[in-house]
Image (cartoon, rainbow, N blue to C red; front, side, top):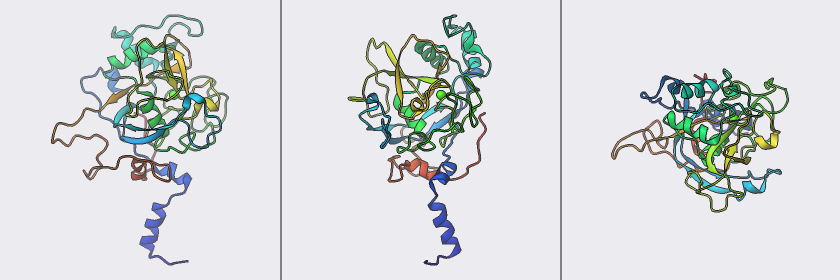
Length: 323
Ligand SMILES: [Ca+2]
């Protein structure tokens, strides 16, 4: 074996993490600034600033259970954006109802009266329009389907879940009870994670409405990270699977079309926010610029399946707090 000076050997070892180390070391979490003009209840919801990048959206290579509507995979470039670190809670939604900006979901079959308000649990039983209205009240919007998948992949194009190919109850809340999943239904948002980008529960717990109309394939889908919509669409997309779904529906590429007026105890949402472009000649933070102020890479995925942005941030594996 060739001998390296200790300092160089340390650099080589740090530069060549094992697969397990990659998950532990990749932590590009960057808190997004809160909107000072927003209601206090909105400012209390922490956001993560996602770096922009290009990723492979749709079926992951080698995934044996990909559905036809996850095809064809395509390269999508997502601009930097902010995303709520956790699902909206009943308390979040109640603040919007109290402010007169959101409708209180009615008592319906499967969704008991004020279920959405259950303290500490996801704001479920809301329609797509109610979720959209909440995000608008908060000065935000629903994420596009591309943004959601980009965030949920957390820098990995080559995995069925951000942690690997095997489902386990240490990372998400779904059917059954095992590992950290000791919840028969929904868990308090923030119970599972964070993923390497700093988000909680994108996979599992409450499934999440996104902005897009549901199409039966990705043919003709946008490649700029925007939502795919058309007039009069009846079904919207929900992502991430939920506490009542099996692991196949929790895969990072899994998607389902749902009638937009549907309510379900397993269906909630989180909000996103676009990052304003910096003024001409300005140096506003867009996520494309590194800490040195140099122009960053494009986020293109390399041979390891990790985006360049994720590779940049292999450091500091201390678990951040949710708030
Ligand atoms: Ca979720």
